[in-house]
Length: 184
Image (tube, rainbow, N blue to C red; front, side, top):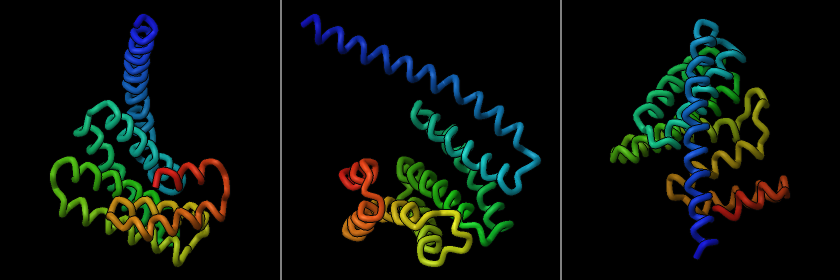
């Protein structure tokens, strides 16, 4: 019993430490966002979009859904501007799709299934454009396929998602790709 109790205590301590680390990172992300405002074009803008995404993910991991949704919405607004300013950037489309997926998950938790579906479909459309008609070549086809597969899974189209995941594994037979397929 002592060993089991120690393992349980260690797990609880590890969870508390993770929570504290994540809580400490959020202000750092907020500072980076403030520093990046005003220069939201090109690579700086993309980095800022990524920061909003990560900050939202961290808040979500902390159970702070409202704060996570705020970061995702701000990131999506910037991602949409960047996509409009750089219509030939596959990366801009992919970043926007990633934020739309996060916003769809927020909508699903908030019991807004129609909004969640609309956001997922919008993300899928962007991802399929990057996969089927790449404009800049910034996103490797295997990465685009993996993104489409993930969205198809969220939409419940598991057969098509599995087919794409199998293609990903064939294209890059790494342990990460195999793990990706195993979770499908």
